[in-house]
Length: 275
Ligand SMILES: Nc1ncnc2c1ncn2[C@@H]1O[C@H](COP(=O)(O)OP(=O)(O)OP(=O)(O)O)[C@@H](O)[C@H]1O
Ligand SMILES: [Mg+2]
Image (cartoon, rainbow, N blue to C red; front, side, top):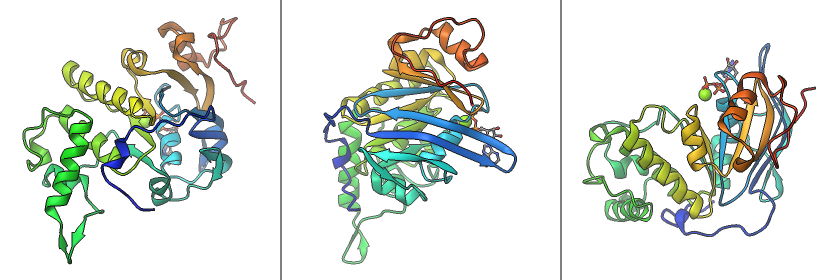
């Protein structure tokens, strides 16, 4: 895969109705713990999917299965309609799937450019090509309108939480990515920084990427999500357009799996009965 930094935010949306990423019947267990049961999920291009669920529901495990950190036990992943096998994080990266984890994985002592190119440095005649990396990093940040950072040569340790999160997102999209998975991107952030990250999420969507956002904060979910998917104890209990849900129904799916007293489904949503 020829990575072309800067091209990942060029704004090509996939016009077809086939979801960019489609999961069918995904099972994952760890020893005696069945973390995912027969999970189906669609991540369409140009849309933000909010993945909700209580602690331990399986959101991070599902994310790590898509990212190639965990291997699925059963099921099939389709990318642009083709069945694919994602066995390693390299497999995911070469498909254009990038993940931003809550714990960020940025190196504090390195500056922004070094972080964005960590492990994928550009060389010119055997030396680091600092100018070209600096230009590509600056172009990516400006295309995402990340403008509050004073210098891309400042160490990441000196950034605010929201700025760090923005750099992590920019790093993910710099590598020609088509799918960006964000696990709790706003958990540690204040109001202003949260807004900054949510704006960035919308911009990724507007660039035609398929975006999945995990958040415990339903205000954040309802603010950015075009679609909502809810996991309950490892099962996908509801999935559909965000307009078919309200906070109450999402909370109910999160806490009961939707079995207590809900006679009707959100409009347009599909529910999977537990086996
Ligand atoms: N590496 C692992 N080994 C064993 N069990 C695991 C592992 N990772 C996750 N699990 C288990 O899988 C289940 C789902 O965990 P997961 O981290 O996906 O939850 P989550 O929905 O992300 O929760 P939270 O909102 O608290 O982050 C939990 O029961 C957890 O204990
Ligand atoms: Mg988690």
